[in-house]
Image (tube, rainbow, N blue to C red; front, side, top):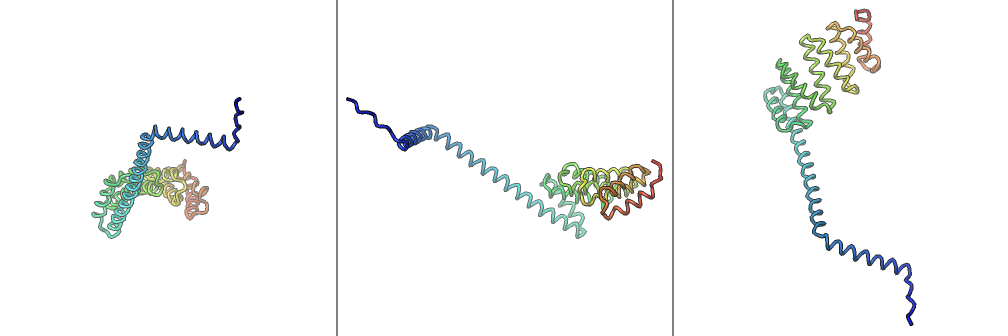
Length: 227
């Protein structure tokens, strides 16, 4: 006579399932261990590669910043030729870094100082287009171009650059000054409607700025000028 089968407890059932799962897992690992090893090695290579690229980029940024500092130091000492050589070397070697953007600005300033306005404007235009995500540089480049045109009595062009600088970067701390300068340029170019528009922006958007009082006076002065 057969003996009745002994019922397993819940604990025994769990233990049997765990043993079965462990055995299956070990079999799977044995079968695919070569691929797992390759995948693990590949992951290590990727991590090391990414770390190396990040370190290299960081190292380049630091070196570029140091060389840009040397260029600015030469410029501040009046050694314009050395400053330009250093700036151009930074541009050639580190284009795309923030230091290269600053080097482009320095290059533009040097050409402007020498009265070489065409290459100065090209340098500033490069900053405004290629480094437009760096507000401080791009705004400064547009403002610098405006000042060149203003100095050359090309007042309407100057007004357009001052105007555009604030349109693109309305939160820049130098915005009110650029608008007033743009208003003055338009006014000298007999573009009174545009001049009034810029002066009014200063009064409306920057009422507590130092430029607001001057803008109000200018508005009153040209209030009845032809449109």
